[in-house]
Length: 568
Image (tube, rainbow, N blue to C red; front, side):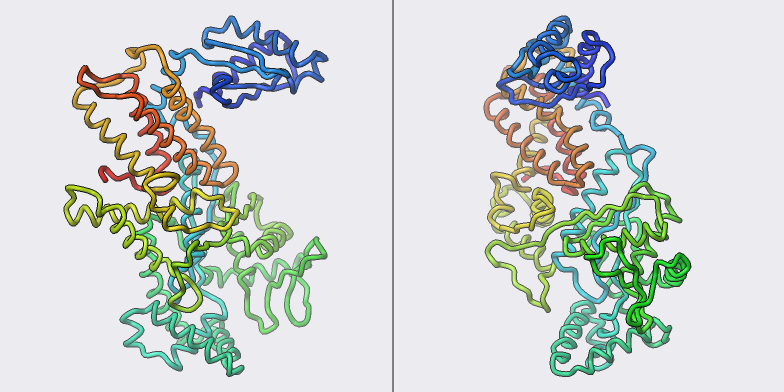
């Protein structure tokens, strides 16, 4: 990976070694405030104890070495011992050309030879997808795309909820109150109505919960009627689910639901008994945890039925035996912290995998103005959020666009609406609650998907116009000077590799989303002050800045799962 940051780090490390020989100290460099320089290092501060010299003495000696290096235009010490450097314009412009020519090479492939499995979305069969599933879906899909960009082999799985006592309740509701002809016209919506009706009735009839458990036990025991009905429910739900994923631009390699692991549960239970880590407690099978303050993990209920946790263990074993990954990632909301801690600890006790298990947690979706209320049961549906976003996008943004046909308006509405929903989720720290504010997410100014889309349209328009005038752009032919706005934009572009690595390390797409916004903000400042195309011709240097900005935005949009419109 050939980046400006790595170049500066290597040059300063070389100067440090020339002065002090081999050392335990390693040079680290960071971008700095442009009023001080382009990059800074604190090596003089971190090595002072080892070298038995003051930070200022160390800094001055390193600077004396750096003064002989051809890449820097200015080097200075900032007390108490920071070394700040500025690169020459020709060095910066050469790197800009690299970004334009080979963005993937600049970002790098540190994950090559590594394999990870990521599990996200987890909708429930028989229910429409709620916004809590939307968060897992969007965050998980973006993390997958980041890791793919960085060279990892990624397997995306979706642990669909297609087992559990709720299906016994649903089957009882279908048998008792359902009409198959009505259900088949609008399956998932009708199934949710029946499920909600069951719970309303159960508030006044304690026998219904027992009836639901009995129907579920029949599923586990292989009852043909209940099995056939469950398969119908699964098929109805899957068709609606796949259509929604297609609209969101989300895909999976596998969708191994809970039922896929049914025949693997006995092996897990037998293994735990053999290793004597599963014991009986009040008729149930449990695993005691190392932390005595936490409740034991329940492996099997006293009636012999399995739990979600047991199927999670079977999932880990299957992943290990099938793919042998280095990483297993579960993108699940923060409410499941205890559940997944138990799963990971029990898995470790059983020796199911050598992979690193990671819970990528996230908060809840909250609507700022209360504009979205539940219309079915107690969940806000993804389909309702999408429909309302499309309505507002058409009224507030697309209606202002000129020279668009009806089909173009429809296409732009769909694109901007899905972008707005996804970007609003991804720009926020996933570990906090995700705020959904209509005014903010649809604004053409500020940190929003429409602002990013509008900026990308501007960049594309300039590139198209310039392509008619200039056949190619090469850094060797450029004017070798950069003013403040040009330098700021170029350095922001050069950060792209650092941002991708940060998102990889923290499983945090917001690092890339907010970098994207900052890039657009800086680009627009550059655009308003510096004409790229004038009556006298095209500024090749500024055109390269424009085109490299497009390259970087394309990669960022791609890993965020956003689509780039050609016009607005």
